[in-house]
Length: 320
Ligand code: APR
Image (cartoon, rainbow, N blue to C red; front, side, top):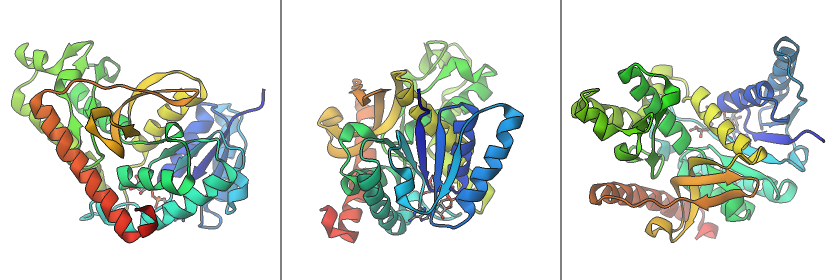
C-alpha cells in the first residue's frame, strides 16, 4: 500500500514541527510548502537526515509550487503571520485572510479530496474563509484549536493535582479567543468531574478559576515568553492528533472548529465543538446540553467569531 501524502502549507515554526512529527509517527510522506525559498527544502532535508537515527521512513519534499501538493490525503495549513507581544489573534486578520485566498485556490486546484486542518489565526475566521476559498465540503475541513486549548487546561490540572496528564480530560469549546469556554463539569481526573474534586479538597474554586483563566490566555502567555512568535510544539502535536484520527479512521472525539448548521443554535460558522474524526472527515458533531452560565459563555464566544467573520466580509466583499 502506498504511503499517505501529507502537505504542509507553511513551513515555519509549526510547519517544521508538524513535518518532524509526521516522520516520527510514520504517518506518511511530507510535502513542505512555503513562499520562502529554501526554508521548506532545508527543513525537509534536515528532518530526512534525522530519519536514519530515529529509524523512520518518510520522503520529504520542499516546494514553492502548489502542483506539488497534488493528491495529498491531508493538508495542514499554517501559512501566514504569527502574533507578536501586544497583538491579539484578531490583529492578524487582514494579512492572513489574503494568505487563505491563495492557499484555498491551491487546495481547490490540486487537493480537492484532502482532509484539511487549518491552524492559521484568527482560527475560527480563517477556517471559515479557507472553506469558502477552497470550496471543500464542510465535513473535510476543520480548525485546530480545541485540542490545543484542552491540552493546555489538562497540563495545568495535572500539574496542580500531581497526577498523570493521561488521566486528565478537559473540555474546551467555543472560539479560539480569550472568551473560549472551558467546561469544568465535563473535565475530569479519571472520570471524576472537577467540581467534585473541589468538594474532595483536591483544589479550591479560586485555583480552578485561575487555571480556567490561564487556559483562556494560554496562547498569549507563550507569545509573551517567546517574544518573537507564538506557540508551536503544542499546536503541532494537536493537529497531528486530528490528522492521525482521519488517516487511521480512529474516530476520536476531539474538540475542533467545525462547520455548524444549526447545532448549538449556530448556523454557517466554524466554532469549537466536540466532533468525531474518522475516514469521512467530520463524521459527527456532538451536541451537549449547556447550563445557563455555560450557554451565556458560549454565546459570547460565538459573538466574537461572528465579529471576526463580519470583518473578513468587509475586507473581502466576495466572501459576503
Ligand atoms: N503561502 C505559503 N506560506 C506562507 C504564505 C503564503 N501566502 N505567507 C506566509 N507564509 C509562510 C511564512 O513564510 C512562514 O514560513 O508561513 C510560515 C509561517 O510560519 P511562522 O511565521 O513560523 O508562524 P507559525 O508559528 O508556524 O504560526 C503560523 O499558526 O498559530 C498560528 O497564529 C499562528 O497564524 C499563525 C500560524
